[in-house]
Image 1 (cartoon, rainbow, N blue to C red):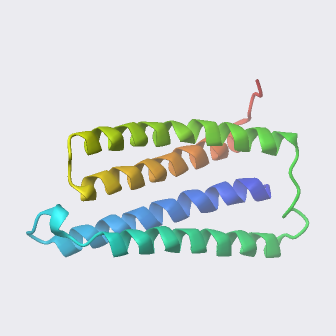
Image 2: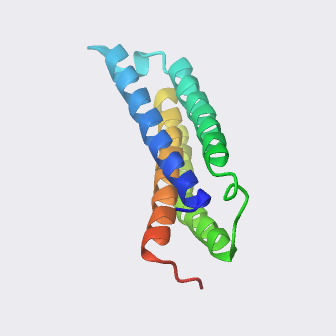
Length: 142
């Protein structure tokens, strides 16, 4: 398994764990109260910050575990990375459009922030999954 494929796995797992943790904490804090009443900002910042730190730490651990592969990228790795990023960005665009619409109809900040976070999460999941599938099943460059 190449270092780039390992990084895609790390991003996928960290993203899913961080978002699931965020959702569970928010739902747990809500109880019977409406979701918009939950103080979500600190939890959101911790989830995003923790995911960033975890990804960096795991990437460094991968580089230490196999230093000979750490900086090695061939043309296929670059094309798979680019393809995965392009596929993942579709959710960022959809999330941005959804957040813009929500702002226009003056929905609560809770919903707007959460749709943006969800867009980033889905973008990361889709992009990482695309990269992993390309590594596992083959990749036809254009």
